[in-house]
Image 1 (cartoon, rainbow, N blue to C red):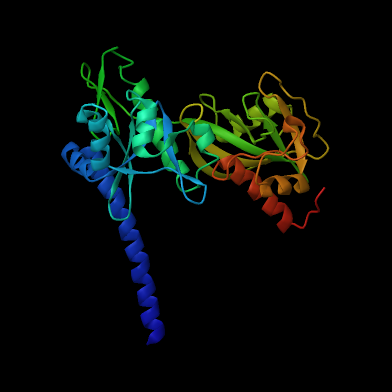
Image 2: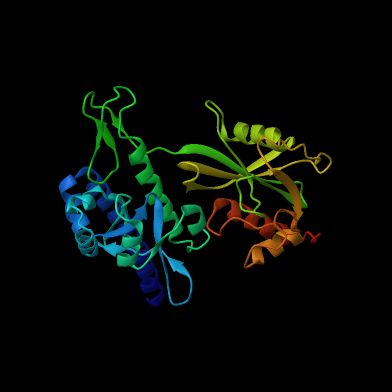
Length: 342
């Protein structure tokens, strides 16, 4: 009887979790389709603030940073204090909701004085690339989504077919041309990101725009008509002169740089007999093979290594970046296979 009860309870728990997720998704869809419902949700919702696409961060007592969410009523006080019309808040874009259907929005206040907003909101606007190294994994994706949606709206105010102004719905999930009625929706460009291995080492590269010492997995945009595998093999051949002989898919992630990208992460293998690099320096500043020992040290590092570009161990992307996930995944597989360091 007890076993039957426990099994029944387990099923109820799974059903509750599933129902909660379904409820949130349907609530989000309702807000995207019903402007009135979205306005009501905004009046009781929370906002992530940006200033010219830089997110607002706040240092907590532990010294780490968070992305604070401000209640709508708090933002009403802010705009009133700065002598701005409250209609600014209606430009907020829906980005998600919590289990209790509490809606979250993002808002760019670039038209307001940066220092004044920082003082009133007890925070600092930080460049998004830098903020990714300061935020926790749970907050960073929401901030990235917020910036991507705000930037899309800022760059799609006119119809590509008619040249006339477009208008957004309240949620910000689409824009429509008032002349031809054509709808446009936020899009992401497919990008393949790959960690190449020869069985004992993995290959990392860096662009000249990277911070000193930072190395990452290779990445490139998919060309029109290419499959994921074709794009991967082409990028590796172009950037480092290697021919891939095996590919396996890992996972995917939205990434806001340089614009909204859909990162498709893969592992790739090359023959140990053909590992001589021929780096295209118009694409990469440097590319190097790293051992498990070097990668393990980099994964455990708390700060960038001294020595910058020539440091023995690389400085890796932030923990929530999919490139970091690929590198960690490779290291775990190496250890599980019992392959020695070095």
